[in-house]
Length: 102
Image 1 (cartoon, rainbow, N blue to C red):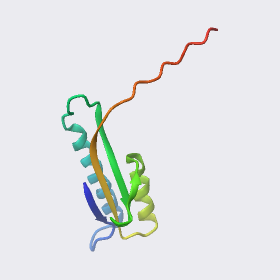
Image 2 (image 1 turned 135 degrees about the vertical axis):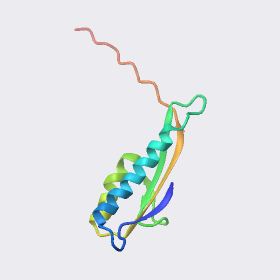
Image 3 (image 1 turned 60 degrees about the vertical axis):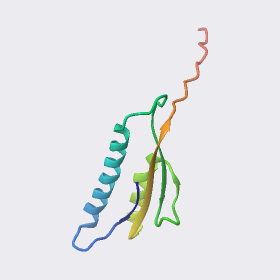
């Protein structure tokens, strides 16, 4: 998903428009996670970029998107750009912690 979302629209409440935008992003992520995984892949990971415009977009973590969107809306921004691309992910095994004798 590569899209510029407006935060103001004539005849629409800005708060509802903001929530509809967040819902569309969450719906896209859910849909991508439901896709079948390729052989040897553990989960779907996401590369994300966020900014006021496409040219000003910087790399962001998926969990940071909602606070970033809220920050743009609270500062009075008119739009924001978000790019979310799914990629195969591989989990790293947990390191075994040696048990200490009591």
